[in-house]
Amino acid sequence: MLSSHHIVKSYDDELTQLRAIIVAMGHMAAGEVASAIQSLTEQDTDLASQVIAGDHAVDDAEHQVNELTVRLLALRSPVADDLRTVVASLKMASELERVADLAVNIAKRVIVLSQFPPLPSVHGIARMGEAVVALVEAVVSAFAASDVTEALAVWERDMDVDDQCSALFRELLTYMMENPRNITACSHLMFVAKNIERVGDHATNIAEIIHYRVVGEPLRTPRPKGDTSSFRLE
Image (tube, rainbow, N blue to C red; front, side):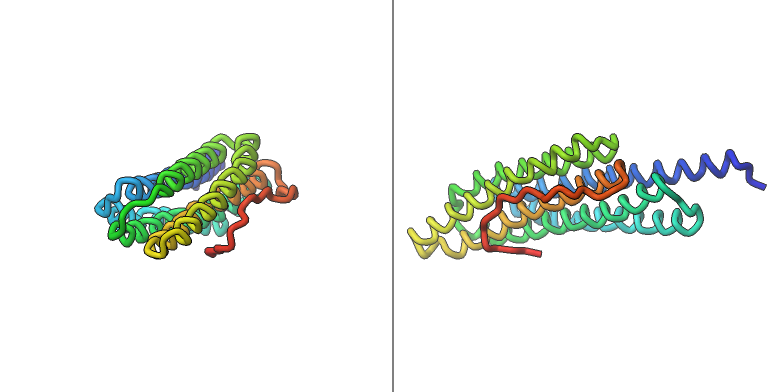
């Protein structure tokens, strides 16, 4: 018969494993976005193809989280703080899987954009991409440390990404009006910018999940938003 000490240690080990998978998944998703942005700035279609092919790793991690959370809920009956950890992990895995999907979307656009001359707006999109990668890395760090302050800092910084997205849309519209031959490339860049902005949204979603996980109640402050573009990619 298993001792109560062994059962408790096994339970703690499973919770630790769950948190470790989420952190690893977060770093993978951030790395996929960073590689997608790099493939855009360098017009590196091979790297873009690697991003597309590598999406399965994040999907596999999400599957591990799903299986482990089901096991914990079914066999351990977690309550209070532990239950919030399990629920938060499940939600975060879904958010991070979407981040990786958005990286794939960007990489697919890069392959199409390689057929066109580069536009100056690519550099602005790269800066925006670097900003959202930093947000994802910071929010993953906040989760690992149960740091609500760091999570809320990410939540507030997302507005800067929204502002950059709006400015890029205005710039791209100008290029399209100046030369109709830019319309196709600029349209793809608009979708890239919007995908990057959506990564920032997922980072803020995770920040709110961390607040719930640590504090025990949802964040009720209205989310700051600065994006005024009309492209909504769900």
